[in-house]
Length: 196
Image (cartoon, rainbow, N blue to C red; front, side):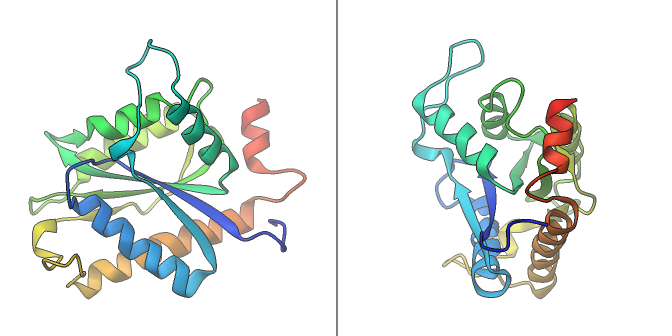
């Protein structure tokens, strides 16, 4: 089990920099739920004002900071909009700036996707699961795909759909439960995967 004195930390990587983006709105719902009901410290990393270099250009201070935040976290949420049948280039840039071996290696990961269309972010989440697994992350089943996302929030960013609220809550509960059940301070699954 995790150290009982330490509050669980979940880092959410936001894969959009568009002003008032729906990925950020969905993560804000997750943050409120985590703060009010789960006793979890959910940190949202919004890359909008960060300097993240393209692969092969060396690490920036912001990239080093994100790597540190991810390594110190107990669990991770990767949240992305669906663009052209896949996850966003912003999410890929975030992942590419997590070092090698990736700071995601051995981390429990939950996936959250948003899309304007009626089938949701299914393709984005399939591709993101593949990449996250490839770098050694422990991707949990049950990703959340929010379809018709523009109709799910009002102009102030308030979520209008109780089913989506429930899905986001379940995603967080599953991630917290998995992390509590399958990690401990002395012999974590994360260290097992990292050392192999």
